[in-house]
Length: 344
Image (cartoon, rainbow, N blue to C red; front, top):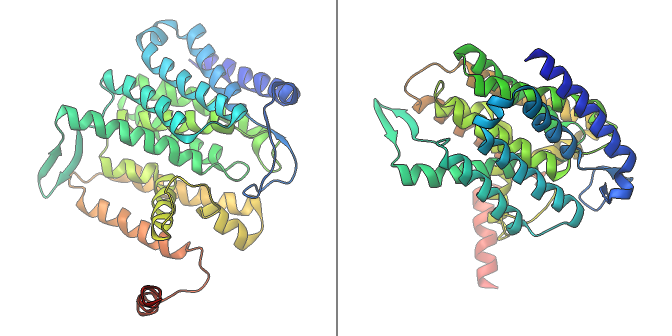
């Protein structure tokens, strides 16, 4: 296992280096626009490099395991390829969603699904198979997109992924779950190699081929970890991308916009605009995610009511603290503005 991880790390380094060298010829470059934090053209699609390193490493050095979980690696490949296609041709969001739903459906078909929402006041909220399957697909697709939305500053999505992957690795190690240990460890070393090139100032971006795949893998690991920890604990372990998505979607709906429209209203945008320093902004967000993940790892209570209440409180605090409006508007003022618009 250790030798395989070393090879995956080296493969990831080599493949990403090649992508940096030949990105222009392959048409895999990120040209800055109004939503970009960078000012110059940067190579992208490093996800092709580190995801390929994981798949090749597992195929060569862990063949029996690779065959047993071929459905998993096939699903990962689907997500990576649609992300790569989007990096090159900028396809519509619904096309990406179709392929991610397909990949999620495959892993759910092989019994990686959310069967219970936890225990509250002594009663377990068990889901019927059909509802569990639909909810699991929704959860996988939702978090896959959530991590993708966090890929806005150098080192942010990769750093967040490393923290979450490490937590699932620790859970797998604690409970002797080889699936959790092998998959998380493989991506930890592959993404670790990528971070050498992605830390500010970045030499390459992971692109959708990376962020979508990492979101997909982490969501699958989260569902597998439910055999050992509570759903409330998982909320904290993958907390920051979820919180950011809740904030952004609610803000867009408040403004009468589509929840899928691209904008610069994410937590990392707000923090960067306030501090004007990429590394500081990224480190603060990584510390927040680390704190949330440690809380999730430490949750032991069988009744998850208070844990869910705590998570909802944190979402509410973040929603108001990272409000893109610099001035707080009381409810009476908001109500008056709505009445004025109706009268007009």
